[in-house]
Image 1 (spheres, rainbow, N blue to C red):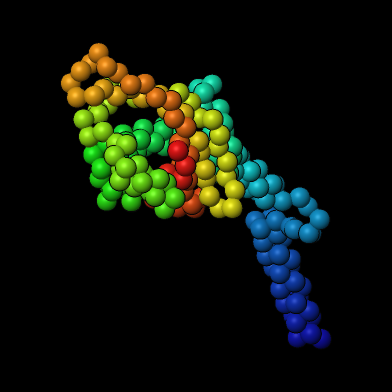
Image 2 (image 1 turned 30 degrees about the vertical axis):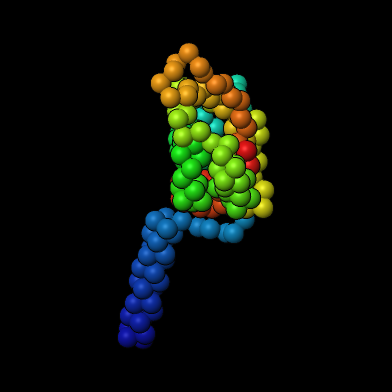
Length: 193
């Protein structure tokens, strides 16, 4: 009987040790029933929603139409676009004045190119004309549709003929630029003048 009492005593000791280990594991790991709210998951979702909210920069009154683009294309940069549009205007008008069809071909659509080509062929361009000033008056329209960004820009340009600063020709133009929505290239193409 003494030997049987020792086995019973060993079982009790092992049971106490097992209960102690389970208690310690539970206090360290915790208990999850499946009905508790996952606060980490909520914080993660809230953080992602905040990141998705587009931070539209401060736009001038004449640039307010660009908000539409910022809402759909978070990587859009209106300052870079407007600087590029201004440079494109200068390059295209200078190429047109000089009759440089090769430069024009790469910056405009086929329809716009045909119009410029026809005007050059009929002699409507003036190689002596040069820029005196160029200002972007504002953005008249902006949209993101069919995976394309389309922006209409109003320009006011002044050109002089030769070196005669007294003969200034002032023009108001609205040009429409377009590029694929998901394109990482900074290049836009002129689709309408």
